Structure formats: C-alpha cells, structure tokens
Image (tube, rainbow, N blue to C red; front, side):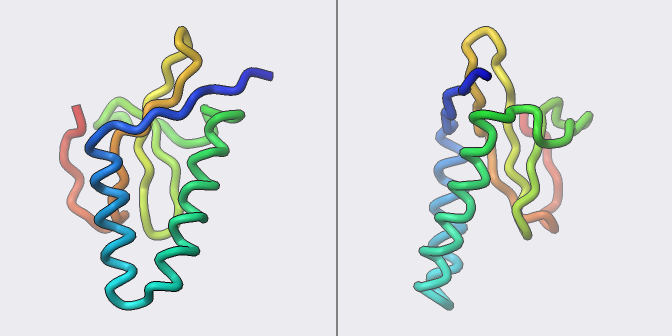
Length: 97
C-alpha cells in the first residue's frame, strides 16, 4: 500500500490557523485537542487518499470533520494529497479553483 505525502496550500494553512485561533478564543484546551483531531483526520488521507467525496462544483475531494470540510486534490503521479482549504460546513461555498 502506498503512503501519499500530505502537502498544505498556503490558503489551507491560513484556514487552519484561523480555525484554531477562533476555538482558542473560547476554549484554549479544546483548540489543542481539536487541532490534533484535524491533523489525525487529514493524516488518514496518506494511506486512503480517496476516502472523501468528490465535489463537482470545486472539482476536488472533501473530507468532513465536524463542523469543517477539508478540501483536497489527489496527485497520483507524485503520490501526494494537496490540502487546498478547510471551511466551516455552513460557510457559503465559493469556487476553489
């Protein structure tokens, strides 16, 4: 079984920083545990990159980690998963690409 490399786009890193900062505002301890939960969920894509669903509108995959959607592309040739963005599931959807 292949292990794909996980690569984060700048936008995804900014999204993650914002999410953790927002959670920490109300509950610093929860921010730490949620960050680890998100990281673990994303790392599952290393061994099972097609775990998520395909979003026709944005032409990429997404994985749900309540209440966020983790958007990503799979680069089979490079054996890499590119994390594109992380959005709250209620956030108005805009085009990623």
